[in-house]
Amino acid sequence: MIKPKNGSKELSEIIEGMENIMQTAIHHHNLTKERLYQCNDYTGPALIMTNNIMKESYNNLKNRGIKLRFITEITKDNIHYAKELQKIVDLKHLENVKGNFAVTESHYGGSANTNEGKDGPFVTQFIVSNASAFVKQQQYFFDMLWEKAIPADERIREIEQGIKPDVLEAIKDNQEIKKRFTELIKSAKQEIMLVIPTINEYYRQRNILNIFDLFEQELVDDAKTKSSSKVAENINNNYHLYCSTKCKRIRILLPINDAIKKDIENNRHIYTSNIICFRKIETAIETKSVVLIIDKEQSFVIEINDDKAGNHDKAIGFATYSNSRATVLSYVSIFESFWKQSDLVKKLKESEELQKDFVHIAAHELRNPIQPILGLSSLLLEKKPKDDNDFSIALKIINKNAKKLLQLASDILDVTKIETNNLILNKELFNLNDFVFDIVEDYNNQLLNNKNIKLEYNIIYFNEVNYSSNNKSEYIGKEQNNEKINEKIAKPIYLLADKMRITQVISNLLNNAIKFTSSEKEGGIIKIIVEKKCDNDEAKKVFIHIIDSGSGIDSSILPHLFSKFATKSFHGTGLGLFISNNIIKSHGGYMWAKNNNEDGKKGATFGFSLPAANY
Image 1 (cartoon, rainbow, N blue to C red):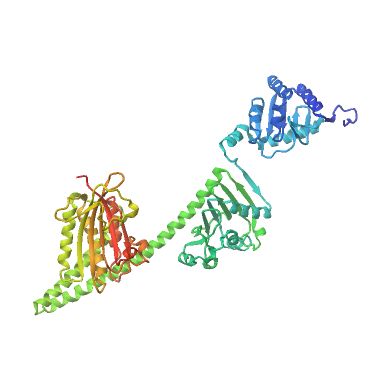
Image 2 (cartoon, helix red, strand yellow; image 1 turned 90 degrees about the horizontal axis):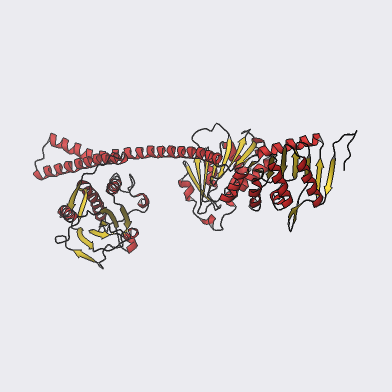
């Protein structure tokens, strides 16, 4: 016992032994008139609820109207006791709370720690005091903890529903900031988003935090042998490196100048199957802060105080970490806004390049037919040819080139309609057999003078045979489970489609097939195959295949064959397939192409599908 001075009644005493401690606690409970505020570590709820005497004493306090507040750490292990204790006291949760004490309006009691026994936790030493200064001090300390703690219901819900508690933490130590930054990057499982706001900060990240080395740490052994050409292909606005961190995607926003562009390219040895994508920040960021977002669940923001400092410790201020959904998603929203802005700028630049390409191609294509039209028409005006044959040849050339101009104008108009969603279809019901037969006959008449090319036409009618859309060319030429039928006696196949537009598509594909087959010295055969099939949902579809034996499709344009201006030919705008593909899509079908070398043959196969009419 600590004796009071000058006759004071203030006493402080150390109580030992669990039984004595319990009797002292209950004695002070009985003396309490207004309030009892208590703070215990995670063992506190079990300490009270497993001891019937203590539990009864707390119930008596409640029945007497004493204000009871209790702070503890609620965990998965003590949640049952916490729920029971919550029925008696106003309970709050505080993460990692240590120490055990209680304070009333007149007394303080506390112990340094609790011990675990076979019958539950117990205390071996207990300090009690009625010293007013000490009581006020502990009351103030409790009030601070109470403000910081969260309601027990909230913590219980987090545990039961598997919700991570919200954390907002300020970090001032520079070494701790670097450590947390590295640990967060390594912990990513799905995606890393990183904003580097200034050029100087990029080099600090690059040289001091070794950001590239951090991504490289987990590389597989054979990753460095992979091709490095992909970085060079994306060196304008969109840079890709490949790393084997656990996350599936890494996106980095930063200001990019020529030096940074070169530095990124020099680090292109970092390759695996996962992608790191760099995008240029197009708008200056007012707030100079590094923003790191991990899996859209955690954010880490590092304040930059002095961007000119070469030393990272001098450049940065404090950092804030949060896993609060509202906070993290606000940073995600900002990041995505900058990312989309970069996308829009990139697309705008691509559009400008396409526009330049189009003007160049259009000027070239317009010049070709205009020159003979002007030359020959001028010749006819000046002097009519004496020979009727020469006159006829000149008129044919003029007519042919005028048709080219008309086709170019039509293509430009169609592209405009497609891109503005104004392609209108005038659908009608017609017999596809007769329709294709007439087109073939027309082309055969045009090819009478070209003995090197032969045009063949077959109809294949599948009688309720299922097919897979993943094997679109599998059925071409197969005779099992189907009938090859003469076009004049074939069962009618009806389409509800825009007849003029379907003619446009087939003519485009046939013209391409003839052009590339004619380029071969030995000529070749062009086949048109029409198939009618039923898919797994019993929906009937029509497939039209055009197979040539020409030079095939250039491998460099095959991936984007149906894009605008996709051509390797010296003649043509590369708009035909783009228009044809969109016409088929607007009918609810699809178009594809492949080289025949997969089957050991020459040439290419183009095909498209259309829904068959129920007729």
